[in-house]
Image (cartoon, rainbow, N blue to C red; front, side, top):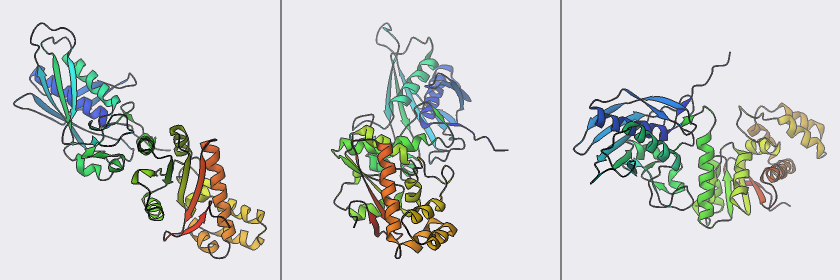
Length: 366
């Protein structure tokens, strides 16, 4: 029986819980063990409070991000809120204002194209709404407050951020406080697709109309070596999200997309797989064998290709003796990408060997 994967909660929900805990601590005089916060879906979630303490101006509480069974570098990160309550100078004129800022370990935006302008802390609009709502719930009918100052901080944020693509997006000094709903759904990869979208937005905001999409750091490094004159923002890692990345590129208005990949991913793309992870698509060397027969190559070659155990084994076999078959894969990659991207985008495909050499470029076919 397949194990059901456990859901978790986002950095935004964690920050909202810490903020609510700090307000309750100030008003009730004792630190809460757990808090209930409203998610952006309208549902509620109970999050444990990790620690609370008073400060000269207010209180600090922290909570720990739990990503459930989703792979996430922020899983286990402690996220805190420093909260100060300011009394009104006269009679309360309305609900308290919640002022949210970013402290140590929260990244700061330095490039255009993201949901917030340069200079702002990287606390996205969704988390800001959750934090403000959580603070409002904690205040309840407490009228002796005009402003609540909430500073979100992440003790190991700068260290964690080194494992992300934040620097590429122009987010420096820490992590982003994210969350479109508040819930992390295992293997949904929402954070990855959001990062792809953000990378494409930054590239467009920097005035670029073409972008190089790679499936990982190694293929990206080879692409940057191939086009050293292009700005860093013009390279976006898309992982296994073949269809989604092309749809996003089309939506952002790019005129040209270059897919820079290795042979294994290229075969899956050539087959039209929308997602190229091993768990979501099958690497069918049988398809490669069929394409070989369609080209008129000897049946013995098709049999050999079909019996290969890995794409790398097939690539080693074909690279020097049958470059025409590698080129056929590349042409099919372009066709599949064009279907996903739709009209108006020119698609180019480059296939690398495992040392970074170019074995196929759809713009330089013989």
